Image (cartoon, rainbow, N blue to C red; front, side):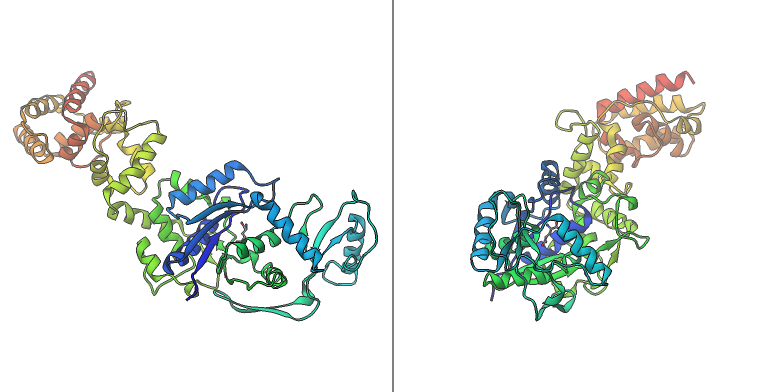
Length: 470
Ligand code: GLU
C-alpha cells in the first residue's frame, strides 16, 4: 500500500485561525490514521505579506494543539533555486514562456473581453513570441495550459469534479520581480516532498485543475485532493473576527484546553455517527476524509464551552494543571516562585466550579497572592454581630488541629457552629471571606487546605482585625 504523506501549508500572513487549524488537524489525523508522515511547510513566497511574528504564531499554535510534524517546517523562500530550476526546465521544454505584455495591453485586453461578455483571461499573445527582447525588459513567466480537454479528478470530499481547459488560461508562474507564484510552488513542493494526499480549504478548489496540469507537464502524478468547506459564524456568514475569537492562540488565552478545541474542530465538518466526544486517540482511529461533510459548518461557541468543561473535569489533572500554570503566569503569578498549593489539587477543587482556565486562574489567585480586600456585598451579607466571635473561636480550634486536612477542619468548625448555635453557613461564609476575599469557594475545609495552615491563621487574624472595625 502507498505510504500516505500529508502536509499543512499555511501562508504566514497572520495568526493561525480556526479554519486553518481544522485543515491542519484533518491532514494530521489522516497521516496518523494511516501511520504515514505529516509535513509542515510555510508558504512564505509572498514576501510583502509574510511576517516572522505570523510564522511564530503558527508554530506556537501547532505546538499548543500538539499537532506534531514529522518533517519541516520547510520554508518556500529557502527553495527559490529549485523553483528557478523547474521554471527554466519548463521554458526549455516549451511548457512555459516569457510574457512581455505590458500592463496597458493586459488592461485593454480585459476591457475588450468584458465588453464582449467574455470571461477575462490571458489571450496567449506571447505564447509564440520569438522576437528579441532587451535583457532589462520586464517579463513574467506563464504556464502553457492545454487549450482543450477536461481536467477531472475525484475529490475525497466533494466527489468527482471536472473543469474545461478552455476555461483556464496561461497563468503566471513567475512574477516580474522573479519570484514564483503560489500555484507553481505548491506543485513543485508537493511533488518534491512526495505528498500523496492534499487536504485543504475549498477556496483552493479552482486552483486545483491548474495545478494538475502543471503536475502533468512535469511528468508527475498528482496527489489525491480533498477540499474542505469553510467555517461559518453562528449567523451563517463567513467566520471572521466579528464573531469573536478566531485565532487559535486567542482560544488559549480565553482559557480553552487544546483537547477541547481539537474535539470541537474535528466535529466541525466531520462526523462519526452522532458521537460528540472524541479523545485524540479515538479521532486518529476513526478519521477518514470520506466522512468530511460536503457543506459548510457553523461555529457554535456554546458547544466549545461545553467540551471545554468536559475536558477540564476528565483529563488527567496534571495536564490541566500545566495549562493552569500558563494562565497564572499570564496574570503575573509564577508558581515556581510564589508559595501556593499544589496545582493538581487546585484543579481538583475548581474543575467543576469554572468553565475555562482563564476563569479558574482568576478565581484561584487568592491562594498564591495576598488578598486585595473583601468583597463588599459578601461582607454586608455575611458579617454580622456574632461573626468576629465565630472567627476567633474558629482560629482557636483550628490551631489545635494536629492534621491539616479537609475532614478534620470541617469537623472542628462544626463544633464552632454547634457552640454558637448557628448553621454552618454562619461559620463557613465569614471564613470564606477571610480565606478568599469572597463568599464563594469550595468546601471550607478544602479551601483552607488550599490556603495552607499558617496562611489560614494569618488570614483569620487579618479578617478579625478588619471586621472588628465594622
Ligand atoms: N498556502 C495556502 C494557504 O494558506 C495553502 C495551500 C495549499 O494547501 O495548497 O491558503
